[in-house]
Image (cartoon, rainbow, N blue to C red; front, side, top):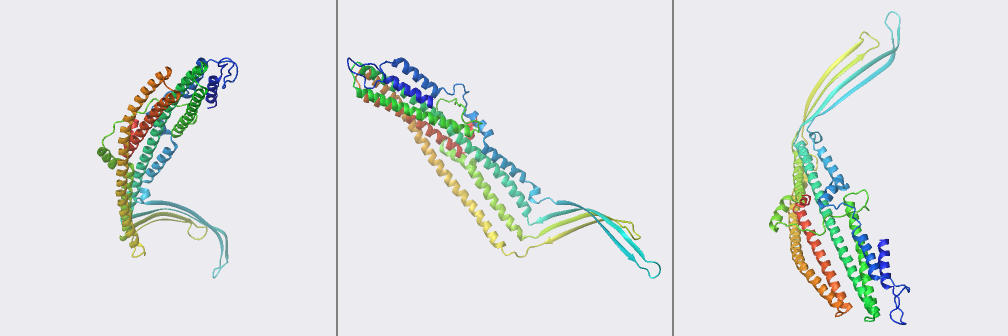
Length: 477
């Protein structure tokens, strides 16, 4: 930015530097007595302006939209987080987490004791026993299995599998949102670059007008006011060019951020010089695709299914439960005294328990609330359907209007170019004033700006329509 400002300033100075305009009349905007060649110096500076603004990415291989999307889909941090969450949901969707499989536990232990005793017989000597050590080792396997719980276990398993499917749909939604955002920013970059080219072209036109005014002012055919006005217009166009260069850089940085590039300041160049529009199906076909494929609609359907599963889970408390418990163990004991040295024991046990929860104080309210949740999920689905239809209709109307506007602006820009060419010829012949010439130039620049805006707005509507209908992945083809 600093170098570009220096070049533009130098161009202005080069335009304003003259010697003497006529005998004894000093140039009111001269900087010194040395005259610089406007045709050579200003052209050289303008060429440098081109190099700084439009050829900064000359050494960068132009990237297509498909390449940017593929890179971003692999590297974007937000998408990587969403995919990890999807994998977590897939890991949770197992029969073990639902409680359908038995739980098996293994236990083992060791115990020991040291004691002493005195044995006093009715006849004979007293026996004093000290430091007697008894120990024992035990090990066992226990199994606990809920055979029936009012179908709650199966409801839990269905819930985990539905959450897995919904997580996959949420990942798809995140991918589609990302693709829409990156595609819109890619074409915003294309638009900003083309706008910069238009502004540089405007600077060229203003420079040429300034050169003509300057030469005519030198021979006295134009006033100082005409020269100053031409210089002000040149300054204004140059400033606009500088501002547009900043907007282009911001768009490039945003693209690098979306693609998770290691550096945000590296060069970038798009392979497209203009915005290309796709041919979309008619409104009815788009609505059918939206109704069947929209990710938000699919998530709403998942939520309705989850509400049904929750209702089944609550109703399971109306049924009894059946649980199986079994175990097998081994124990060995070693005795430090007495007639028994060691005892080994093997044992197994098994039991079935059946129960029923007669009253817990909140079963009815929970069932009523679960039924309301199912109803709310259905209502939300209907509301989302209406909202999507409204959004699609609004976007389609905007899309059609922008297409008609784009066709009109294409005609306008042709007329504006022809108008400028005629005005330029008349201006060279001295048959047109500088203000009228500036109006023709401004009309051309405004027409080029309007066609850029119409193209981009149409493209954004196209992207939004494809995103709603679930067809955004067409940009990867």
